[in-house]
Image (tube, rainbow, N blue to C red; front, side, top):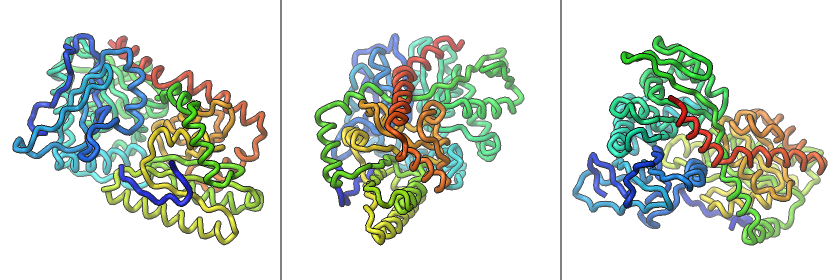
Length: 495
């Protein structure tokens, strides 16, 4: 459990052209294929197989419980460069989900995932933090990996099967798959924001990516703004015209319809609510408050350490709030959890240094005034402990500079069974389009962050409870199961 003064830091086969498989006795005859960069399980040399981290797995698993599903993805660790090494342990089947593994060598991981995915697509699509870096050699590896995924599905999927491809790592797969398997119903969902047409134009491979996405029957986005940006980009293509919420693509064989939809992702709300109500979570939450000497209020931030999250700006804003004449007499504790992410990349190493320098400066100022220091935790925190923090906190701070959705904001709401607590939420998260009753703020504006936090702290009990009641209704209405079922239902009707 997280306690004051915690200083621990934890960072987040053979190879051939054929993917490793562990699909058990299933013939895949009625299967839904999930195609994502990562499998729902990952391999660690020390600990073996364990559940994969991240919002996609937690969002999809509850929706797949009633389906016969096949999940195609990478194990999260590289395969040997050639066939001389031992064959890696096969991934386990998870409940009703069969596994087909796509191998990648260490060199491919560096060029594909660490390279073009996270130094080109990630910064370009979020439009904050750092400038994207474009490397044609890395994009050729990206193309090769996308082809490997497409070939695997083409060999494995039965006639007419629904195939759901996920996120910016696999944007070429829809078109590559359509080339050999036009019978399949192909859906694509982008979890991150789609960039403005002006930004997308700077991508050297924008035509390749656009053609790749237009291979789908259905393309889904988190928000209406991302969907509209994509439609605007697509309509610049000579062979594409818009008809309502569809794109009509002219091809040698005729005109093909591509449906574009908005499907905001949610958490497994019932699971988080049940975890929050458990005796273990309640006891842990009480222990957290006791470990911090029972402060009047706890403010909480929980993020991956990523430049899109605005953690350094948030720290400055909280420090200004705590030093202000109105609040420096209040007993307020701020806890910031920063989970390691992409820590091998130089940009993330610089970000960590920036955040920790900001923290040291802020805590020095607070100490000079005899105020509580900001408590910072840089480590991977299990879900159960995150839930305990959600329960222990009074106000959640989600102030990302850019986010496709942000599930942390919705998880916090799902955990507030007593109907109390406040959510301060960035206007530039996808979640803001649904969670109107949060205190909405401009994330890059320190003054506006302090305003929003101050309003949340000053709010009367009736206002706080009214807001939380409406937030919970939104979160439980549009949860993970609703998101997945809505997308798959639309995919079945997309043709």
